[in-house]
Structures are given as structure tokens and as C-alpha cells.
Image (tube, rainbow, N blue to C red):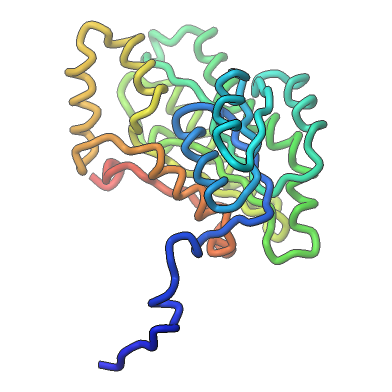
Amino acid sequence: MTKLPSSSPASSATPEDAFRLDGRHALVTGGASGIGEATAKELVRAGAFVWVADINVPAAEALANSLRSAEALHLDVTSRESIAAAAARLERLDILVNNAGIGHVGSVETTEPEDFDRLMDVNVRSVYLVTRAFLPLLLAAGEGREALGAIVNLASVAGLVGIKQRFAYCTSKGAVAAMTRQLAVDYPKTLRVNAICPGTVQTPFVEGYLEKFHKHNKEEVRAELRARQPLGRLGRPEEIASMVRYLASDEAAFITGSLFTIDGGWTAM
């Protein structure tokens, strides 16, 4: 067997060399907690400047202040005025991560119209509004460059398979998956658009769901959430953030219009 020289990339490369985002500007909605927080940290680690966009300004400021290259940005993803004000602050944007979202438990019979509307407003309409507002900056980022602007949407396995008592949530995340593919088709040479479809991830989002809907049997339901993923555990926010970093990097330059499941084998089962 031929021994590789010590100076070869295979022997000298480190994780810090891969999937670099040096000099790029990113915005993460819902960036102050959970997957958004982990994503902001990971993108900064990769060399990007990150706007931590969140409706919870104190949390966004606390996170941004803890990072070496980040700034907090007030953003209510359901408000056109808030989005416009946020967009006006930016002069450049290379990466948009549409992460903000909420959940809901209920069948079509028990989901009230106002609950359905709220899910669609936060999980679907917001992706449309935010993407539309920041699109000129994203398109400008790719002009004359091989590295195109990139959008990473946070969908869910709930947008790919049916889940009991998740009528509105499945509907909303299915829409995010469809928007991802459509945008990729409309902007094939000027913008890369992909989505990540996580399974159940250990975040404040999940803790809030357990507290609201299963306060009396929280640990029993937590065990059920672990068991439905063949790996037998919940995902970690950092595992999703690593995929965001990859999809935003030059190494993913040939990837657009794709959906990536990170679900412990759930959808394969």
C-alpha cells in the first residue's frame, strides 16, 4: 500500500478547514434559541458574520454578544413592517436561514381555524415574506461569483410523512418543502435553496410542547419521542446546525432544491 506523504490534504486537513464561510454574511430567523442558536454559533465558527434575528431581542443580544462576529436584529417574521425595518439595516446578505417556527397538536377536527391560521402565518407566510424581502441582497451576493447566495429552510419530517395529531403542523412544513423546491427552480443559476427536515430535536421548542400538551405525563411522552426514532434518542441542535453550515458552503455548490432528513432513521423505518 502506498503511503500518503505527510503534506497531503488527506493527512493535514482539519475540521476547521472544511466548509468555511469566511467573509460571508448570514441571517438566522428564530436565531436566539434552539436550532437557531446552534446555527448562529456554527456559522460564526465557520467564519461568517451572523445576524441573530429574533422577536426576543434580549436573548438575541445576549447570544450575539457571546459570539465574536454577530449582531442582534429585532425581527417579527409575521410582520411586514418588522421585516422591512430589518432588511433596511443590511447592506449585504449571502446566507438566509429560515428557522423560525411554532408547533401545534390536533387533528383536523380539533384544530380551530385561528390555530391553523397562526401556524400558516408563522411557519409558511413568514418564509415567503422574509425570503421576498431579502431576495435582492441574496441575488446580489451571487452576481459575478461562483459562490451563489444560499437559502436554507428548516422544514421537518412532518412535511414528508403523516404524524398523528399534527394536522396543521404537517401542512405547514409540507408547504416549506414545496417552497424550497419551487424557489430552486426559479433561480437555478443565481441562488441555491435547500431545506433540512429534522426529526424530533432536543430544544426549548420541544420542551414547550411537552409542558403545554403533556404536563401530566411529560417523561412518558419524551420516551415515546425517543423511541419513534430508530437511533433511540432525540437529535441535537448542533447536528442540524452542521448541515446548515455544509449547505451554505462552497462544498455544497452543486446542491439545490434538495430536502435533507436528519431524523435518526425515522423516515426510513
